Length: 115
Picture 1 (cartoon, rainbow, N blue to C red):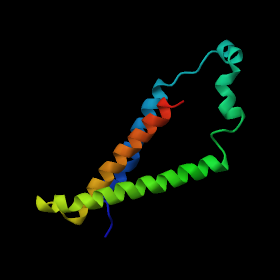
Picture 2 (picture 1 turned 120 degrees about the horizontal axis):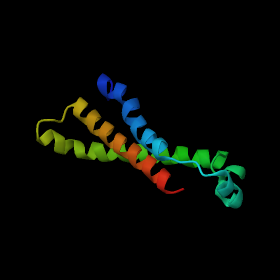
Picture 3 (picture 1 turned 30 degrees about the vertical axis):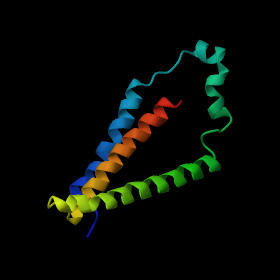
């Protein structure tokens, strides 16, 4: 038995794409003269500050910690779901999935606003 229903697993790409498309549709390029006048805008890319092994490991570790937090918080909330007669396996999986989508949207928003 899987944790998520099939329709939930199939909809992940749709839900995961919405925040990225929103960011991409409002993103704007700057004019060439502005880029030449402000070389500090591209220092992150030139110096490899975002794409390096250490940053990748930090992101991986953060993902593991975040997934553990989501799982265990939802696991602790599981008895409360059972109290209302909705404490089956698929309800637990749906709650984990909902937390996952909220976290994904928050992460995209945080990464967008932090640069």
